[in-house]
Image 1: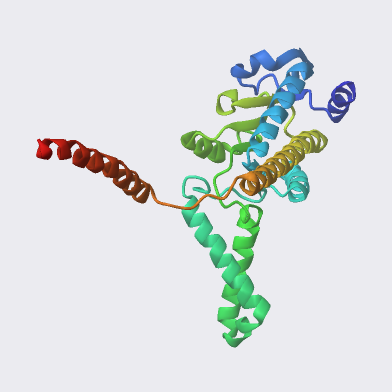
Image 2: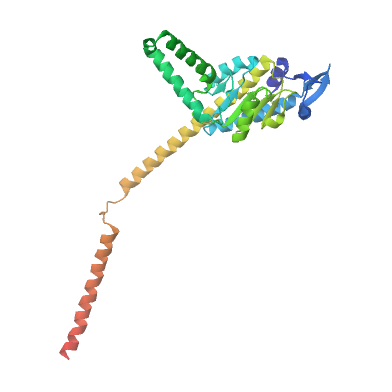
Length: 289
């Protein structure tokens, strides 16, 4: 904890915006003002970061994905590198309107990207004219640039992580409309109302963004490990149940398989026989008399 706090302070995560450019709703997260610049309370930053890590680990352990969004230049490199390592969807180039609310159309565009890549890999694209080949290549590059990060996202994410609330407002509004929880790195000029778990901090520092993304991705890996352990445990229990079931079947004595209807008929015939015999025995003396 001490090393994390020291690393965050050295990265400059506590430096906010100028006093004239702030959002009053960020007042609970501001420690003081120095040289007309707001200073963010690092304790609130660590508190939000730990809460976000715990929440992300729980979601990933349940089998859900976390979508990272950071289209500003300072966050692009960290998100691409870290999210690729943990195999989580991300948007680092441009947020297309309807990425979440119109997810079916986005999936269709990703299928189109796969078609164009297959066309290019097989060499069939050379059968087209020069103009058509250029258009298809341009279309492929455009889709790849905008949607490559989410091509593995086959369902809506369990949570959305955004860097800079003001820049990623469209993504946050779509997540809010769909009821998807949001985790945001918010500067003093942002609005914490758009974030379910705010992490107050400097969203213009590359080092600060890199540390935050690194910690959140570490929580993703912890959730994946927990998911794998639970799956292995459930598999062992299932195998143990099958073994016990087989042993019980082997020890159980073999009995003739008869339907309930046949058993009922058999019991009925056995019960009817004594009744008929008794009737004949009792009727005999009466006839003799």
